[in-house]
Image 1 (cartoon, rainbow over the protein chains, first blue to last red):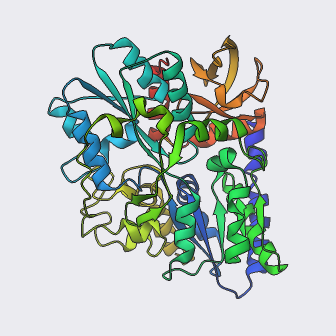
Image 2 (tube, rainbow over the protein chains, first blue to last red; image 1 turned 60 degrees about the vertical axis):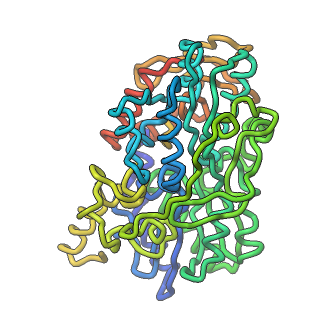
Length: 375
Length: 90
């Protein structure tokens, strides 16, 4: 573990925190981490308690499980209950509540719901069950969408006739734009998503500094990555610069993954609009199966109910997803809504802000309060 | 589902179909390396594995750090590995 020790050097962390504190001075900085993976690291390691009062991290909408609206989960359950259908999904989606329960309950009622690791596993299920129709519940940002794209291409190459995709892929830029347009929140900059950026590269974020005058630093997932990225954001601000920078150069290339982008362009098209849980409709924010691949599109194949369902009243996922409130400020956090019985999506996925805070963050916060540190 | 877990390429199973076998902490499964078609992958290379696909080529140091980080996720890591063990791709 020599590499790990070197990268988790407490002295390096202390030096970064000291420099962050100096750069921040008595200013007031609010940075949003867009990606749920970052939220997880921040709560897991108690990073917010290391930072000076002047720097606040707010959590953004970058958990794909968290942003799926109830109506889409209802459609998924409807699909799962159609005769002859095998419904395949990532494990995370099984517990996401729709208005009539979740996929685990649909399975208990007799629907053939199977959880798969990969969309290519779902395709294998289709090959193994030629007399059934296999639907894959595709969710995820640009990190995951290329996998579905390759699966569609492969389904065609193999001449599979009993496979379709219920496409719920979303894109990262429109919600960032929506948040920048939102009057609720005054942000000083962004920690850009790590894995999404391996696919899309840095160019799609240019509008953040160019149009909205906010700096953005694409960050890795180590605690030191987060601190280093906060440091880079503050340096930009103090030096009067405003640009997109890449802290996660170990993995992210400026141009992204051109193969993935090409395959996505071939197999998907932009939806005119898509509903996000808690954020409402955002234009051009999601992907549907391209008309060239219509035979693999569950939405074209099935007459789905497509009913829009309002978020539960008690749930404040929308405000959490926009960073307007912290998870613990939600009325039902930790009482009616827990990882075991989630009401809101943010409590379902380990990358969801509420689940991450419930599992780790509150302990750090309690400790920090005990020690009289920032809480 | 958003986890990226490091794996080492141990065999190019089918170059034409972009299939490779990777070793993820002792578990070997076939994944698609189609998204890294431009990266000239070889046996011994490290990749970040996400939902049955190699999504980025990484170096050994990054692999060790990421593995350590995801293992700390405990139950979530175990679920991911269990899912990976059950994986059988088309």
